[in-house]
Image 1: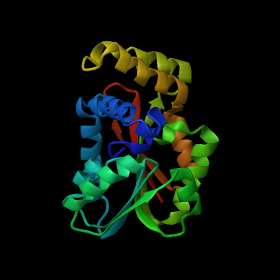
Image 2: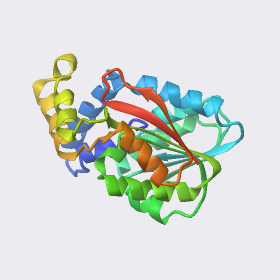
Image 3: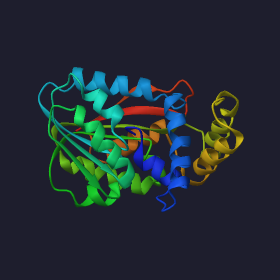
Length: 243
């Protein structure tokens, strides 16, 4: 989610047509810049957790890092010792490479599908972050991912996520109806831009309930699950899973 390369990729796949890619990227960036999904609040909370809950130098694994700008900002003033970003988009990783120049610590960028990269990874991590990308997976795939992350974390490691979340008792169709109700407030979008975004969400987004996220954490091997932030729209929540 550091301004969500994976999410942007699923919404706007890689294309050889530079014009199409630029139009798609502009739609996505407009969402970020207008804070429609509360990026600013989320990355403030991420920074707070890294300052308050991680009391030693740490390796930061940024999954679906996108252009990395928000993550780079969130790491400022923390004890981060190494940054590793993973994304499927070559274009986003080039933006990330530029953003990482602001870091005073070693940075590594890796191209690939995050599910495969994490499943095959053996290097440990201290803090793992993923935002608005995990919701593309179905529940069993989310669980497999969380188990893979848990395998990489030490006893005091953290997984932080910001993802589509329903109140207990709400199904996917109910969540999508509430998503659609946002349209009047996304005033920066043209009808065509909203339609492109909404089509992606209806095709590819699979929220979990609050209880389901907590159960995924427990089943994934995490000892503690805490809510860090709830979006004012009540469509997304940020959780911290402590090893």
